[in-house]
Length: 435
Image (tube, rainbow, N blue to C red; front, side, top):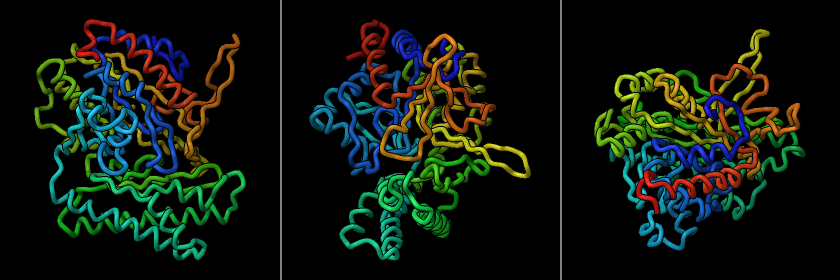
């Protein structure tokens, strides 16, 4: 059975499972999973067949992303471009339902958006963050004395994501400009990019201090993607560039509680209401009310949910990191990635409730970014394809997160499987209000 396998390449079995499992909850990331990763988020595209497949899963499929549904760089605009306009997306309910901005921005299939648990004072503070990021990046580039005014303006425009609930510095374009081809990059180029990363970290720390001074203590945090795990429950560890990887390229100023694992609780609560008429965590529960540790989150599930009604949860992501660090002649591992904890919580829920769950990994290293370690493929003793090096550091043999199925071919390979599963699901009478 798939939930007992590790790094399986049996995509046909997964498609069959998704197509035939009645009590099913898919929780899926977006960038790198159903869309290739790109340097400029404004150039992202999504396929109409994938969107129609998601609609056929109806109330059994939800997204969970650190991106946003709305705004200039939001997914709504990308979907509308793919299907022929907002009217088509609304009438055919092709918007992707679920949580964005790490779990604090909700959208239904008709494109209606809300921010559960978020106050106006917090949203007002966030409106100023994008401008601060823009000034910081512009000042850094001016100091380099190597960019014209036009080049600097274009680079800053491509690097500032003026999201409503998660304004972001996206350094992918700047990495390509400063470092370029990593195989040919000089140590000076890499050092310059590290200086930029440090510059943005300093800004984020200043913004947190200003929020506290404005009476918004502990209402925000900074999400670094990719990262090297957390220092405690809240502070994420920045991954600075080196000769192998770009490291952290997204610096997101986010609302407290906007972590994907908290979003799992919110989506599970919503799923139970849709399918049973009862909210186990209450009608007003949202991700911002969730406890901070995975252990406390799991305890909330164990205490409040009926195990006999628990769906088979399938989590899909592309960002799971692990890096070996030698300290005092002892090898330790920094484990992180924006999808790690939500996949880990799904695994923990399955173990605690004796419910089958699946964790699926999509290899997004084939995109435009150089901050993903690709899967290494080979053959086993029988000549069958197999994964030689899995997710994260090859030395990390005790990683607690077990990935069941992998897609070395990236988003295109995953979407093909997903559409196959949706086709078979749409033929089943119990599959919901299929279209």
